[in-house]
Image (cartoon, rainbow, N blue to C red; front, side, top):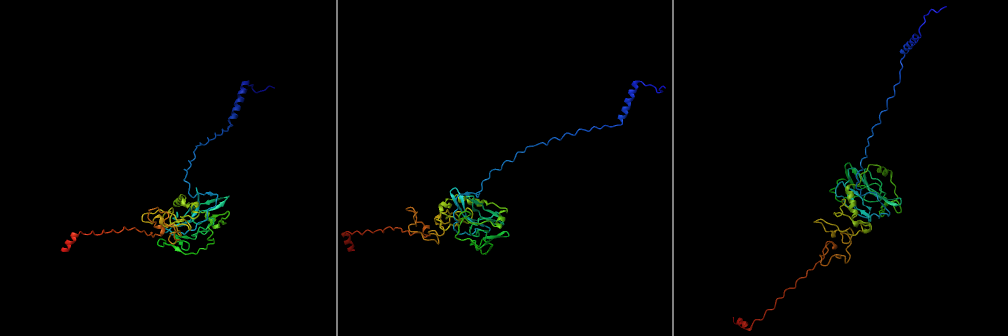
Length: 362
């Protein structure tokens, strides 16, 4: 039996198969994944040079220093009265200079602001040397080595006065308030001093030093904001270090200027010398007593002091100079002025005999 389908040409069959394949592919969508976007460019780095270092500041006068020898004992002296209301007392201490220890006189200072108190500096024996811890202003008095500086600084805290609002009140029991016309607020409060008056040790720790440790209150005060010494306090220290009479080697631990009424006022009226100190010559303004009339309390010739020794009255007076008024307690020595001899009247000449006869005939 013969096949009834017509016979197709070979080319026709190939063309049909191609069209069928295209029709099948036309119904399919082929998606190709897009490539990832390129990474963003790195951020632009701009080099900023560091700020220039600050200019070198002038070193403070009371920077911490070290010494290999212990400071001398504290001298014995009186406190001058405050020059005006609002001044606070800062006790004297030994500082280390080029020539060894120098005495920094105690003085009255205006505080940098209302409400702050002065914590004195002190020497402490640490690591085989004596280190000075700088004093500072703060709301409370911190640790100052347990040193008995006197005048309210008995080793712990301060009993010489307190702030009452914006005014400072002075404790009359430990503060020299003699000029009551300038002081407005005072009170009386007994201060118990547990430190021996004869114990004038000026450093903490080490052999012969004060064995004191900071209290909890003093540790808290050390953590409070502090104010450095004022410019007048720094000037006070600079002037003392330039004064050879304040060197311990020169005064034997008895400075002739132990306390001043104001900072750096070493020649002003009211300067106090230590007991046992030699007299010091002080400059003077017109109308004030000369330097030779300025005496250390208890010195020879000073008011209330012992009389000058024999031969000391005018020992330094050059020949022919005027007597030393100050050496004899403001009573000048008696000066005898040599009087000229009286003139002699020449004897009357004898009259001639003829003149006598004529006078007799008259």
